[in-house]
Length: 153
Image 1: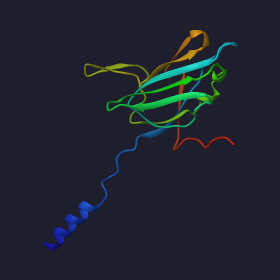
Image 2 (image 1 turned 90 degrees about the vertical axis):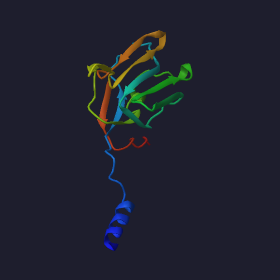
Image 3 (image 1 turned 180 degrees about the horizontal axis):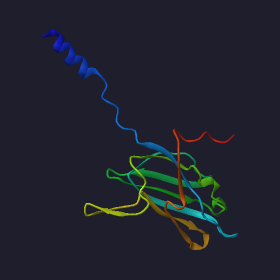
Image 4 (image 1 turned 60 degrees about the vertical axis):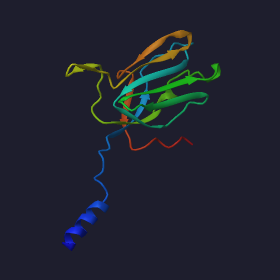
């Protein structure tokens, strides 16, 4: 009886089995040709089934926000705060965020069990002059990572 009680006590005190961790990736925006006079003024990317773990890089003079609600819907948004901080290239949008994915990337919305499931990522990049460029898996890159990269020195 005493050993049964001791076993139960030890089992209760033992740490719970670890939750699955998903896979960590760095998210980058790329693959877009900018015109000679075009500048990036902002972007917005809706997500599905993505945990926004960290913002790794915030371009100088930009505001970014990212997160997920209690469902699987999330977002990352960024905007230039001044004309001088608009981006003439996409370099500052490389490895911008660390994300956790719980399953495979879904490039397009799909119907499953009668419900329409959104794409893992879908959004747009806004350029000076008002041109918008679609952001999907053709223009977003995921690379395996354990953490945000160290800042450049």
